[in-house]
Image (cartoon, rainbow, N blue to C red; front, side, top):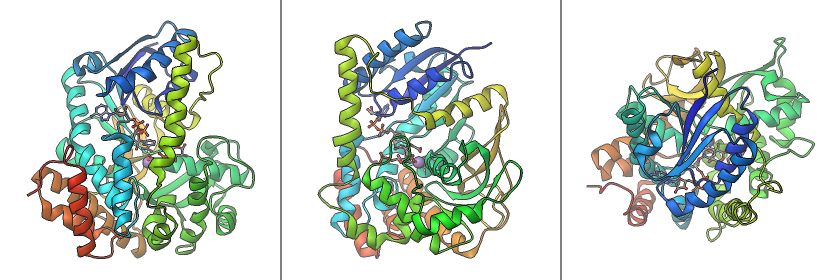
Length: 442
Ligand SMILES: NC(=O)c1ccc[n+]([C@@H]2O[C@H](COP(=O)([O-])OP(=O)(O)OC[C@H]3O[C@@H](n4cnc5c(N)ncnc54)[C@H](O)[C@@H]3O)[C@@H](O)[C@H]2O)c1
Ligand SMILES: O=P(O)(O)OC[C@H]1O[C@H](O[C@H]2[C@H](O)[C@@H](O)[C@@H](O)O[C@@H]2CO)[C@H](O)[C@@H](O)[C@@H]1O
Ligand SMILES: [Mn+2]
């Protein structure tokens, strides 16, 4: 059986140790011969790499491992690039969140002006990863979950249309885990779902069990009262108060369209005023993550290195990241698994821009994804998506053309922003903060 060689781009990510443990837990399903970490911050990556090297030696010594900042070394002899870079790291995420809030606008990593700013930083470096892959391992596939995935996906569609890159998000998976728990099912895979939208901007239209029984009525009853907060505590990462509020808020988002079930991220567009009211402009999600997940991951990595063993580690297998293995297996073994991916619409949603990158169910095999037909979508969702997809397309155009005007239009069009005047104030602050990362706008 073939064993695969993978490069983790963004080796210094807080998600890397959990993903490595997940890969090790799935070796029977997806055998690995080599893991390479690639990052442009050697110091940060080395801390994670030193710990992961010990984990690998203890659990799978046969796997070759190395960490590098050299693209040629990283991308040569690779089957899969697993990409999760955060351009500008948490220091820039903090600015993405705080600058809009200073102007009374939602401050969020991937939504509104913060997402636009992050997108402008991410386009170039993600394209660079694609180019390294194509230069050094032209047969490889990139599984990308670097954010903001909607803008990154539009950029790769437009600028690298023939590249073998699959963009995927774990938010629907996280919500489906909760849905399964609400329904008393063992696994989210016991459900067959229909969903459409843009990344971090979508709706479930149908959820059934394997016998074809409609599970939507029971789910809606629950969501109407509790959002996506199940009766019993959910195992896993995101039970922090701010995430719990987001899962609970889905009940209000749901009331606006009771035919569908919403992605949690819609709260930032539909309840922007409340989100701003409840935000602390001096302490945002970036601060929570820096004080929480980042401190924990790096502290734990250092402990492993100092003690020379990972036997007592508190790291847990990132179970829900196993969608990455499902995707790699679908490509490698032509499994034809049905998965939600961010793909060119191409007529799947009949009454929507064929060039839009949409998040819809696809059958994934060795040729890549085959999107399933969605049909026509209702006016409410169509209107929202047309506005949002225009934001995403204008960001990519602004980046490619160095256009101040297009970026101003993009921010103005975001449903989170009240006027062109406020959009300009935010844009000018973002330009100043992102000098190191954005192309110069004219
Ligand atoms: N799609 C999803 O559903 C999903 C889920 C979770 C996380 N994410 C994304 O995964 C990424 C990592 O998140 P994190 O919180 O662990 O961030 P992090 O800052 O801990 O890690 C990101 C790493 O990327 C590196 N990096 C930045 N620019 C780079 C470049 N040009 N080349 C190589 N490496 C580079 C950084 O040095 C850092 O080590 C983010 O983009 C995040 O939004 C996506
Ligand atoms: O604020 P963060 O950095 O904790 O999370 C932002 C990311 O949120 C989503 O991913 C979640 C996922 O939905 C949740 O269930 C859990 O397992 O962790 C994931 C990562 O934090 C979202 O899909 C990502 O795009 C965001 O980066
Ligand atoms: Mn996501």
